Amino acid sequence: MKIVHSVHILPDAVRLDGVALPVEEQGAELLSALYRAYVKDYPKFFKMDLLSKLGVIATELLVKDEPGRFTPREDRAVLLLSHSGPLCDDRNYQKTISGDDYFPSPALFVYTLANIVTGEIAIRNKYEGDTTAYGLEAFDPAQLVAVVRDAFEDRVTTSAICGWAECIDAGNFEALLLLVEQDAPEGRPFTVQTLEEIKKA
Amino acid sequence: MKQKVYAVAGNILSPLGFTAEENFRAVVEGRSGVAPQEGTFGIPEPFCASLFDRGQVAEYAAAEGITGYNLFETLLILSIRDAVRRAGIDAVSSRVAFVISSIKGNVEELGEDESEVPVTVSAGHVAAFFGQNAAPLVVSNACISGLSALIHARRMLLSGQYDYVVVAGAEVQSRFIVSGFQSLKALSPEPCRPFDAERCGLNLGEAAATMVLSRAEVCPPESWELVDGATRNDANHISGPSRTGEGSYKALRYVLACCDPEELAFVNVHGTSTLYNDEMESIALHRAGLSDVPLNALKGFFGHTMGAAGILESLISMQAADAGIVPGTLGFGKMGVSYPVNVCAANRTTDKHAFIKLLSGFGGCNAALLFRKGGAR
Image (cartoon, rainbow over all chains, first blue to last red; front, side):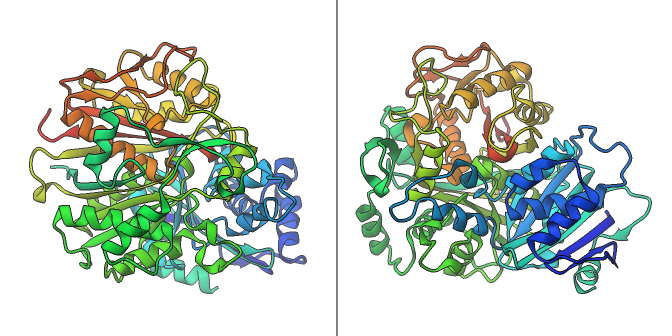
């Protein structure tokens, strides 16, 4: 298994394959700026919650130059891990049912499910394979590698968008996403050490 | 030889009983935990749900010496403790892993102590209760969470790092969840009616369920094997099922590579009783060539127990097939889906020893898992 591409997004920095991208905005604005620079034509993006925006943009950077993009495929999994899941969305939805203003918002409620981000990535890219949202106590490269390796036991899965996607609020989020391929001719080894290097860079 | 993974022991904790056996008996006898709710959780509109008597759970927990945990954690601990005792394993061992499945976990605590809300935090408390040093893996994959957890746990055992994986799912209902599903117009004001022409939505349910899994060498030959399973995405819509049943069909196709439909006692479907879900499942089953195989849904007994559903419904199905029964679909009367499917309205007999558990959920995800009684083939 090899890491073909890696991306690391923080509220004030973006690295693609270890190289820093020029960044002027911060926080949620950073994600919108990345959308304008790399996506442009997927207005659904603006309806998404922060976690989904983060996951969709990170994925976009990983696969933007891939040949045959948007051809439906079942062999690519989307496997994301986090500590807080949709906590950010829980807060937003809770506001619509607290106090005297009881007006529950279906649009906000849907995003309180931890796996909507994996679904949004699947919809955007037409990935029809395994999509699973996992939770861990904290970022742990060894557990992350184990989870992804185990998920590759699926007979059909040959590649995955996988990694850590944590979103506390607009000023505090992190995506460390990888495109991992089972049989890529080139790439970095999918190991704890490589993950630590990407995280530290 | 390829490794095989089996279910060693299980527990179900629901308003219908505190063991897997009590819950199975309720299903056979046609008893339901679903009841009309008025004013529960301060929800203005009436709804139906299967909810625990909080006092009864507290009493049981106190008798078991479990205090200082919130309801979600208490349910998980009680369920896991029964299953682990029955499996006769030492849960402290590093050869034992925990996988916890839930959608909204402890969301009730929102506004109190936010840091206690993530499922990962509760899962840590629960694993620590059992003396586990390692942080448990959480699976939160909407309504298919329980099956995703079982499918992943099976793969963890195949990797050889563990001898046992304890898979536990739980869901506690709250103002948060009920209002959300109501806002989506997904809740029925009456007891649900899976696949029925008059169905008009789902009922939510509370439960915890645990399955202890292990590799072949320690399991008795008559154990239930988790043959294989898969999760597939519709890649279509975050809150509506695919019109072609795409992901559900693909998940079914995956597991059908490992069995002949002839050997299936039944398909235990998701059957939430929403218009769209049941219709979608009929399409997926039809496409997969399973129109003639008996199908049943358990939501009429338990409601939709969300993160517990995949584990709970699998445990009921295992006991049913053991007893030679295809459980009836409580609430079903008149066929209400466009594609031909073989819905079991009342309990039927079967002499077959395999079944498929099927679920679908928001985020476009779908899962199927094939179970077969060891040595049956």
